View 1 (cartoon, rainbow, N blue to C red):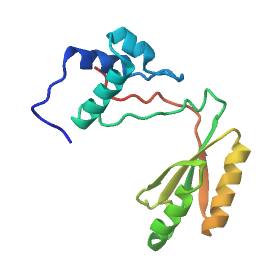
View 2: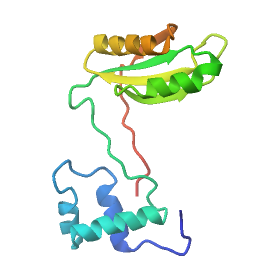
View 3: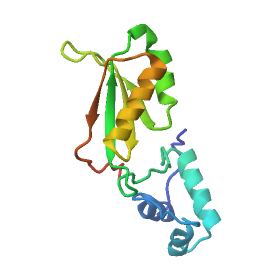
Length: 159
């Protein structure tokens, strides 16, 4: 919810610049940032909350560098799900802990698959096992696994 009368000050801008590329994965992630800004960790957290509340920050989340921890087998599982079962089947698929994304997409004349799940694991064999388990749980047997061969860096808006 944005408030058009609210403006960011210089400390807010510096805070965004210090956090936009991530925060350290440590016990007190805002300690270095608060030191750099000359304020307490509580003030840093409060400013982040206010920036979110006022619409300057849309989302403040965490993402794990899965490749850095050895999760290098990534499969986009594409499923041919009857249209009338997409909601039901999608909910089951999304419930698997190995599934990080679950999307419905349009079908095409040469591509009948309409439900996509992203599975991250340590080996291709693990990805195949997860797909088989999803297939068993949903009764959907028409699927393909597409493996990632290259990862591109995802970045948000930068100051």
